[in-house]
Length: 162
Image (cartoon, rainbow, N blue to C red; front, side, top):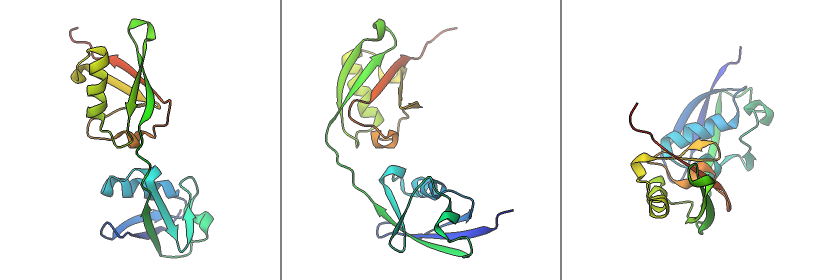
């Protein structure tokens, strides 16, 4: 059985964060804890152990830190470029008609749904939008979905009635 370790994450922008981990945990688990407390998406985080960048897919033990009881990490936040990215909206109706949308990584899902309404006339309340296999949720931003230039958004609508 893996023993529990304390992981301390320091950052210039946030208060000290402390998590319990095991040597079998992946770095991504720490990234997810940080995201839950700071709302910084995983892809915009860099975790440093001394000067070494920790990769999300690797286990903590792969960095030779399995014998320590406390792991001290530093969080750096990457500010991604916020240029407009061309995305394509694919409608489930209208024979898969495509619409070009220009969206920023910082755009909220609500803003994107308003753009979708302007080209499809489907009100945001009835929209179900998916990107990269995930349903877009109100209260999040597009950076949370790892959008890239040319990403596809898939639009379906809620059905009312029975």
